[in-house]
Amino acid sequence: MKKAVIFDVDGTLWDAVSVITQSWNLTAQKFPEISSRITEEQMRSLMGKTMDEFVVLFPEVSVERAKEILALCCQEEITYLKSHPGKLYPGMMEVIKELSKQYELYIVSNCQEGYIEALLSACNLTSYFNGFENYGRTGKGKGRNIQILMERYEIDKAIYIGDTQMDYEATLEAGVPFLFAAYGMGEAENRRFTANSPSEIPQVITKMRYFSL
Image (cartoon, rainbow, N blue to C red):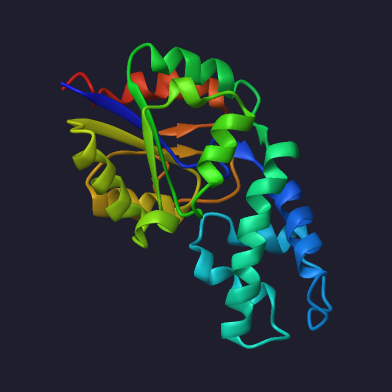
Protein backbone atom coordinates (compact mmCIF):
# COMPACT_ATOMS: atom_id res chain seq x y z
CA MET A 1 0.00 0.00 0.00
CA LYS A 2 1.38 3.40 -1.02
CA LYS A 3 1.06 5.94 1.79
CA ALA A 4 1.67 9.64 1.25
CA VAL A 5 1.90 12.88 3.16
CA ILE A 6 0.92 15.84 1.00
CA PHE A 7 1.95 19.36 1.99
CA ASP A 8 0.62 22.80 1.23
CA VAL A 9 3.44 25.32 0.67
CA ASP A 10 2.89 28.80 2.10
CA GLY A 11 2.14 28.70 5.80
CA THR A 12 2.94 25.01 5.96
CA LEU A 13 6.42 24.34 4.55
CA TRP A 14 7.82 27.86 4.46
CA ASP A 15 7.11 31.57 4.88
CA ALA A 16 8.01 33.59 1.79
CA VAL A 17 5.61 36.51 2.25
CA SER A 18 8.31 39.11 2.82
CA VAL A 19 10.40 38.25 -0.25
CA ILE A 20 7.34 37.79 -2.48
CA THR A 21 6.09 41.22 -1.44
CA GLN A 22 9.49 42.71 -2.25
CA SER A 23 9.52 41.00 -5.64
CA TRP A 24 6.02 42.10 -6.61
CA ASN A 25 6.68 45.72 -5.62
CA LEU A 26 9.83 45.73 -7.76
CA THR A 27 7.84 44.44 -10.72
CA ALA A 28 4.89 46.77 -10.13
CA GLN A 29 7.24 49.79 -10.24
CA LYS A 30 7.71 49.10 -13.94
CA PHE A 31 4.09 50.12 -14.55
CA PRO A 32 3.50 53.89 -14.18
CA GLU A 33 -0.23 53.39 -13.67
CA ILE A 34 0.46 51.49 -10.42
CA SER A 35 0.96 54.06 -7.66
CA SER A 36 0.37 52.00 -4.51
CA ARG A 37 2.76 49.59 -2.83
CA ILE A 38 1.75 46.12 -1.74
CA THR A 39 2.08 45.48 2.00
CA GLU A 40 3.07 42.22 3.61
CA GLU A 41 -0.31 42.16 5.35
CA GLN A 42 -2.11 42.32 1.98
CA MET A 43 0.07 39.58 0.56
CA ARG A 44 -0.35 37.37 3.61
CA SER A 45 -4.15 37.66 3.39
CA LEU A 46 -4.04 36.24 -0.15
CA MET A 47 -1.56 33.42 0.35
CA GLY A 48 -3.09 30.06 -0.48
CA LYS A 49 -5.68 31.53 -2.82
CA THR A 50 -5.60 31.04 -6.57
CA MET A 51 -3.61 33.55 -8.60
CA ASP A 52 -6.75 35.07 -10.16
CA GLU A 53 -7.73 36.45 -6.75
CA PHE A 54 -4.54 38.52 -6.49
CA VAL A 55 -5.89 41.11 -8.96
CA VAL A 56 -7.26 43.04 -5.96
CA LEU A 57 -3.68 44.21 -5.35
CA PHE A 58 -3.91 46.47 -8.39
CA PRO A 59 -7.11 48.50 -7.91
CA GLU A 60 -5.86 51.36 -10.11
CA VAL A 61 -6.37 49.36 -13.31
CA SER A 62 -8.96 47.15 -14.97
CA VAL A 63 -9.15 43.46 -14.16
CA GLU A 64 -7.72 42.62 -17.57
CA ARG A 65 -4.75 44.94 -17.07
CA ALA A 66 -4.28 43.69 -13.51
CA LYS A 67 -4.03 40.14 -14.84
CA GLU A 68 -1.31 41.22 -17.25
CA ILE A 69 0.66 42.81 -14.44
CA LEU A 70 -0.05 39.79 -12.24
CA ALA A 71 1.37 37.46 -14.87
CA LEU A 72 4.66 39.38 -14.97
CA CYS A 73 4.79 39.53 -11.16
CA CYS A 74 4.43 35.75 -11.01
CA GLN A 75 7.06 35.24 -13.68
CA GLU A 76 9.63 37.53 -12.09
CA GLU A 77 8.83 36.20 -8.61
CA ILE A 78 10.21 32.78 -9.58
CA THR A 79 13.52 34.30 -10.63
CA TYR A 80 13.65 36.44 -7.49
CA LEU A 81 13.02 33.44 -5.21
CA LYS A 82 16.03 31.62 -6.61
CA SER A 83 18.34 34.22 -5.07
CA HIS A 84 16.00 35.38 -2.27
CA PRO A 85 14.25 32.22 -1.04
CA GLY A 86 11.63 32.07 1.67
CA LYS A 87 12.44 30.44 4.99
CA LEU A 88 11.43 26.93 5.97
CA TYR A 89 9.65 26.88 9.31
CA PRO A 90 12.02 25.91 12.15
CA GLY A 91 12.46 22.16 12.34
CA MET A 92 10.77 21.51 8.99
CA MET A 93 13.86 20.08 7.30
CA GLU A 94 14.27 17.50 10.07
CA VAL A 95 10.58 16.58 9.86
CA ILE A 96 10.78 16.11 6.09
CA LYS A 97 13.81 13.85 6.44
CA GLU A 98 12.03 11.79 9.10
CA LEU A 99 8.75 11.46 7.22
CA SER A 100 10.48 10.56 3.95
CA LYS A 101 11.75 7.37 5.58
CA GLN A 102 8.18 6.15 6.15
CA TYR A 103 6.01 7.79 3.52
CA GLU A 104 6.15 9.27 0.05
CA LEU A 105 6.04 13.06 0.20
CA TYR A 106 4.18 15.35 -2.20
CA ILE A 107 3.08 18.98 -2.55
CA VAL A 108 -0.23 20.42 -3.77
CA SER A 109 -0.59 24.21 -3.89
CA ASN A 110 -2.66 26.94 -5.51
CA CYS A 111 0.53 28.55 -6.77
CA GLN A 112 1.77 29.30 -10.27
CA GLU A 113 4.03 27.00 -12.29
CA GLY A 114 7.65 27.20 -11.19
CA TYR A 115 6.93 28.17 -7.58
CA ILE A 116 7.19 24.69 -6.09
CA GLU A 117 10.32 24.01 -8.13
CA ALA A 118 11.85 27.21 -6.73
CA LEU A 119 11.08 26.09 -3.18
CA LEU A 120 12.49 22.61 -3.69
CA SER A 121 15.66 23.90 -5.31
CA ALA A 122 16.32 26.81 -2.93
CA CYS A 123 15.80 24.68 0.18
CA ASN A 124 17.53 21.53 -1.13
CA LEU A 125 14.35 19.46 -0.84
CA THR A 126 14.11 17.98 -4.33
CA SER A 127 15.38 14.55 -3.31
CA TYR A 128 12.77 14.19 -0.55
CA PHE A 129 9.63 14.79 -2.62
CA ASN A 130 8.11 12.36 -5.10
CA GLY A 131 5.96 14.83 -7.00
CA PHE A 132 3.66 17.84 -6.90
CA GLU A 133 0.68 19.53 -8.51
CA ASN A 134 -0.50 23.12 -8.67
CA TYR A 135 -3.22 25.43 -9.93
CA GLY A 136 -0.87 27.04 -12.42
CA ARG A 137 -0.45 23.79 -14.29
CA THR A 138 -3.96 22.33 -14.16
CA GLY A 139 -6.24 25.32 -13.63
CA LYS A 140 -8.00 23.18 -11.02
CA GLY A 141 -8.68 23.83 -7.35
CA LYS A 142 -6.70 22.25 -4.58
CA GLY A 143 -9.20 19.47 -3.85
CA ARG A 144 -9.23 18.27 -7.43
CA ASN A 145 -5.46 18.59 -7.67
CA ILE A 146 -5.04 16.33 -4.65
CA GLN A 147 -7.16 13.76 -6.48
CA ILE A 148 -5.20 14.21 -9.72
CA LEU A 149 -1.91 13.71 -7.90
CA MET A 150 -3.14 10.60 -6.07
CA GLU A 151 -4.39 9.09 -9.31
CA ARG A 152 -1.15 9.86 -11.16
CA TYR A 153 1.10 8.33 -8.52
CA GLU A 154 -1.31 5.54 -7.58
CA ILE A 155 -1.43 6.60 -3.93
CA ASP A 156 -3.69 4.46 -1.77
CA LYS A 157 -3.83 6.64 1.34
CA ALA A 158 -2.82 10.24 1.91
CA ILE A 159 -2.94 12.91 4.59
CA TYR A 160 -2.96 16.59 3.63
CA ILE A 161 -1.22 19.18 5.80
CA GLY A 162 -2.33 22.80 5.45
CA ASP A 163 -2.95 25.97 7.42
CA THR A 164 -6.23 27.42 6.16
CA GLN A 165 -9.95 26.78 5.98
CA MET A 166 -9.54 26.48 2.21
CA ASP A 167 -7.08 23.65 2.77
CA TYR A 168 -9.56 21.87 5.01
CA GLU A 169 -12.33 22.25 2.45
CA ALA A 170 -10.00 20.86 -0.21
CA THR A 171 -9.52 17.70 1.86
CA LEU A 172 -13.29 17.26 2.08
CA GLU A 173 -13.49 17.41 -1.71
CA ALA A 174 -10.54 15.07 -2.13
CA GLY A 175 -11.69 12.63 0.55
CA VAL A 176 -8.49 12.66 2.62
CA PRO A 177 -7.83 13.50 6.29
CA PHE A 178 -6.67 16.99 7.26
CA LEU A 179 -3.80 17.89 9.56
CA PHE A 180 -3.94 21.55 10.59
CA ALA A 181 -0.64 23.45 10.68
CA ALA A 182 -1.50 25.88 13.48
CA TYR A 183 1.93 27.52 13.25
CA GLY A 184 1.07 28.84 9.78
CA MET A 185 -0.79 31.88 8.49
CA GLY A 186 -4.45 30.96 8.65
CA GLU A 187 -7.30 29.37 10.58
CA ALA A 188 -9.44 26.29 10.04
CA GLU A 189 -12.64 25.14 11.69
CA ASN A 190 -11.42 21.54 11.83
CA ARG A 191 -8.58 21.45 14.37
CA ARG A 192 -9.07 17.85 15.48
CA PHE A 193 -5.57 16.95 14.37
CA THR A 194 -3.30 19.94 14.96
CA ALA A 195 0.44 20.51 14.86
CA ASN A 196 1.49 23.63 16.75
CA SER A 197 4.97 23.38 15.29
CA PRO A 198 6.56 21.33 12.48
CA SER A 199 8.22 19.07 15.04
CA GLU A 200 4.77 17.86 16.16
CA ILE A 201 3.74 16.65 12.69
CA PRO A 202 5.14 13.08 12.89
CA GLN A 203 3.52 12.38 16.26
CA VAL A 204 0.18 13.85 15.14
CA ILE A 205 0.24 11.61 12.06
CA THR A 206 0.82 8.65 14.37
CA LYS A 207 -2.08 9.72 16.60
CA MET A 208 -4.37 9.96 13.58
CA ARG A 209 -3.90 6.19 13.08
CA TYR A 210 -5.07 6.62 9.48
CA PHE A 211 -2.18 4.73 7.94
CA SER A 212 -2.58 1.81 10.36
CA LEU A 213 -6.21 1.13 9.47
